[in-house]
Image 1 (cartoon, one colour):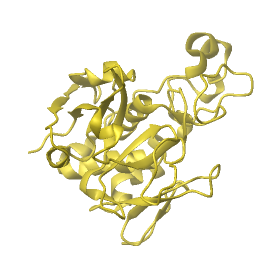
Image 2: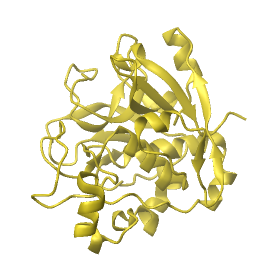
Image 3: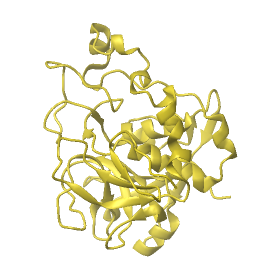
Image 4: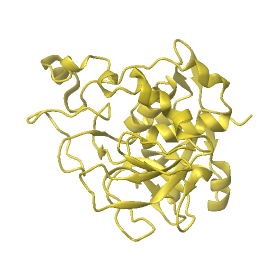
Length: 281
């Protein structure tokens, strides 16, 4: 398999592995985690590199010339323009379920290194003086929060639109799309044991986490068996704060990164349930 380059955010090995790296703001951090796909990366997300589907300038409902308009500022404030509803990808219905699940993660990995921001689309960078909901990112810039991240990934990758409020997203029974159709979402109840949870979850599942008050407050993408960790810890992919240490003991920066799903972690201890888009056959 030939090496390919994915929008400067990953080093891609000769085997098609994606290694999470920082795109510039935090060059001192290098993730020990990676993803090894069973399908060549260019087959999974090559269309996002070759076609307008992956063009960040076409990621919103409004054209770039209106992203910083008075209308957008008054209507959407700090969140900025909402994501467009992407068309369904007709060829994906013929893909095996595991290949579609891998596309979820491959699509999401294109945004590793983006900040945690309360934005609707990852590449929206408002000008100085624009309203900003303070986050761990330290300043306004490109990025999304947890549920806008998961929503954007399924939207861009498959034309499936999810509610991007994390509580509402956790309660969904259907995704809007592809096209005028609705795609059923399947609620997965989690076993009590850590080992059984790992066995139950599937790559690309939306895993919801509760806060100290018992309310849904976070969502992650389950990476599953394609994740690679030095200590064999399962991995998730999410947009989150700078409060998790990697296998080397280093703090993982604020924003979109691969993170460990440890038995004693908040992710596991406060996990609520999962939603699955692509069912086992």
